[in-house]
Image (tube, rainbow, N blue to C red; front, side, top):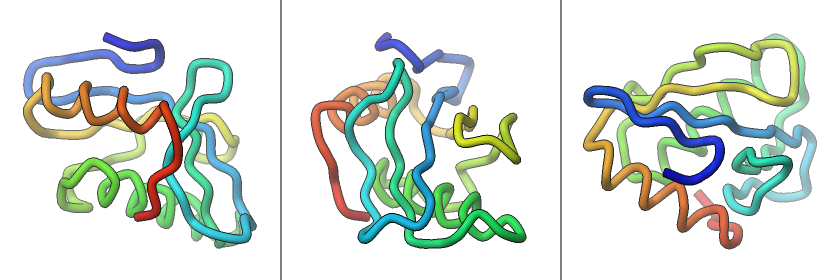
Length: 103
């Protein structure tokens, strides 16, 4: 699996790097081994975290409820768990690292 992607039974754990207050929301690219997630929301009251989780879910084609924040609630680098078929999720995440996709 690619850097920043770890497979577990029925889920994939991703390391993401969130860029709040971006001009446009997008998921794609890589920063220090983490998948880059750009969100428009400010990092206040958990709004940027929630928008980042929604963006990751949309980019991977899974429901929002399948994505949960594992660690990094107050930092820009976060670890998220995504429930689903490991191989398909890992391939989708690897494809997103190549460039941005708008959720």
